[in-house]
Amino acid sequence: MEGNAKSPAASPMPKRRRHIRTFPVWVVFLCMLPGILHYTIFRLFPSTMTAVLSFTDISGIPGSSWQWIGWANYKEFFILQNIRDLKAALGRTAIYSLSVTLIQNALALLMAVILNGKFLKGRNFARAVYFMPVILGAAVVSTIWKLIFSTPTGPIYLFMKNVLGMENPPAILSSYSYAFPAVIAAQIWQNMGYSMVIFLAALQNISADLYEAAYIDGANEWQVFWKITLPLIWSAVTVNTLLAIIGSLQSFELIMTITRGNFNTSTLGMMVFATAFGGNGATASGGTVAGMRQGYAAAESMVLFVGVLVVTVISQAIMKRMEADQ
Image (cartoon, rainbow, N blue to C red; front, side):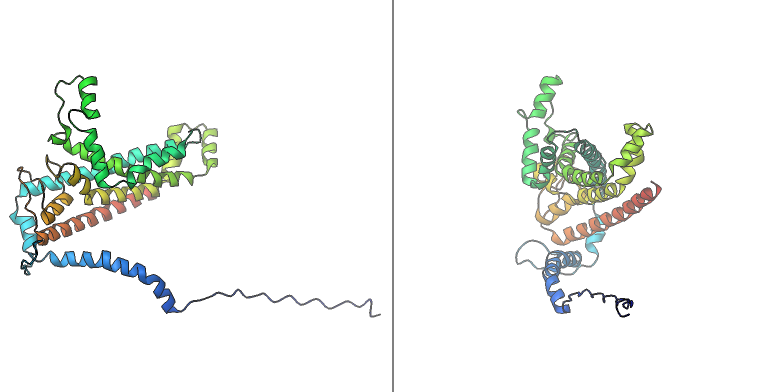
């Protein structure tokens, strides 16, 4: 009978194809054009012109003539200038970069671990407070630290006199022994919050189950940090290390606004600024760097660029090898 006949199997419904909307190439290029123009005008063109001007004797004096002098600026930098001054500047730059990189990342990691704890009340407010120096300009930061180290009313001066019992505490920012560490402290204070945020983001991505399993197995806090936390945030350690190295090697704003390069605080970055725009680029012999030599300053900046590039590449290779060993 027809009622008992089996109905044919229903054919499967055809799958609906997902329609992917595409845009013409000119629309994509038009969207990218603002970024391309910004990078070309404010990044690529100035960098290229710096490399070109390093082979000239151009100055910052309006209307003055300038000419192509080839490798004369580089010859003066490496051969003709006082080797003692060059070694002193390079040594201060290395000490500045190494101190900032190590201390800044160590303090930032410590603060990130503390602020990542669930037990801490008001941790969001504390995070904002520690990050606040990052958004302050060099002028504001230098003013704060000048007040801290001021003589005879600054808190550091009063601490050394009233607590440590020193009869005649030194004027920190006018001392050949203390001015350079003071500038390093200001640099670390301004940028530590940025490194802390990167560490904090990495710590929040670690699963709590890993810590529970470790504590169940009898691991203590130190073992948990070295065996679980540090290997899992090593990518953040690499990023912060590279950022600190690059930033400290190029830094000159705080040195310029706090000490103007006096009292053995001038680094290679500060010397570039002093050579180009005038000011004190303190030499090893206590003299000042002649300003308004922008061609020579361009050559110094290219040497600094190559140095930063080499140090960054070597540091990145070392950090990647250490990450692979974790």
